[in-house]
Image 1 (cartoon, one colour):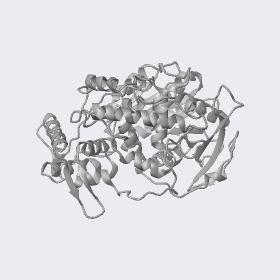
Image 2 (tube, rainbow, N blue to C red):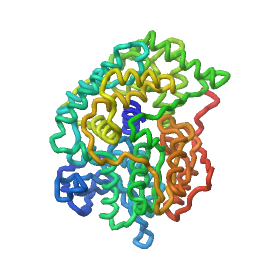
Image 3 (tube, rainbow, N blue to C red):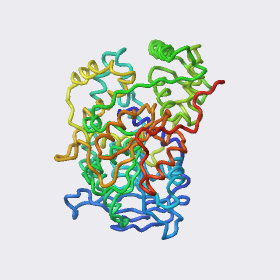
Image 4 (cartoon, helix red, strand yellow):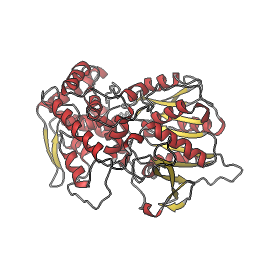
Length: 506
């Protein structure tokens, strides 16, 4: 798991669907029970009051924002409430339920289950929020400076970059600590959110958890299963992180390669070599792009790698694979327009301090860094880590960025949960992994399943991050059977995707 690529991943998921309409969350007071009110389209919302610190129930509280897609099942057919976490960390469950993620959940489960998601503590419209920045303008200016928000992509070309990134992490960590006026940061981590899952479940009148978590949501689900193994009814983790890497803030070392007809070659090795040659080319000589007065910029090493990652992450979204192949072929010929357009979108050149302040970066950093081990504190430590790991993976540079962001973190709670993740749960886990997931490899799914008694891995033979990236009726059927009647797939089951990612013509 990595800082830049996971934030980038979360932003990709965020862009896959917009909220249907607005809702005035200030009108909803946090209470100890559910008080559902109609919100958005076809949904109901409430705030649940939970303790900031579960060891001090009478102390300060958190108002969790929950959203529900209610089932139309009769009382006799009703099976309970399934909780969904869309990952991140820092993703808003309230927002994601209104995208294609919620659409799939409804298709698979809504016939007999209420589907509920929520903004975890510190995130979105849950109160209080974590904010390192005082205004949207300050936030935008921070992100606009590549030293404040960059992968380590050009470290091999600039010996001064790593120390600058280290210094930036020290600033961000100090800002986070000083601006945490409500004392939220020690209690924003995965352990506290796992306790929130249990409280939500109990408030719904259920003894055991029904849960589906994707990406970082697999860390949350596996942590819950470790902490409360006898409170698992059904638990699906999908796009599974390396739990050991998460709790050590070390990051996964993974690699991937695109392949499609417009960028074809006689072998996968030749495709990879051609892509590496492109990386080297744009690193040495970035390609300027001018597509009229509204979209212009350069295609450099970072831009190209982000575009490749995006296509691997969401291959179905806007025919990413085909567009990537065409863009790579054009870039070989010196035309970077297609590649730049894939990552640019609409250029947000205006600042609006009246707009809601995004806290995805803040929440992500606080949860990732606060969950992990305290890291070395010198720039030399970072340089040594990079020298040791830079040849481990094609994406070693972006993975090192998680370590960069956390080297300046200063808020750690004594006695917090830090693994290991394992257990003998009251019902076996269903663990889903894609064969070509660029963020969470199938090996991580198998590793986590081995740590839980009776857990079974369902393999989806597709690219993309989590089974939500690519439609598969086979996967949906197995998930439905697991929730409805507890049927686990046979060991070694592989589901095909419903899409053809490798067209024979362009």
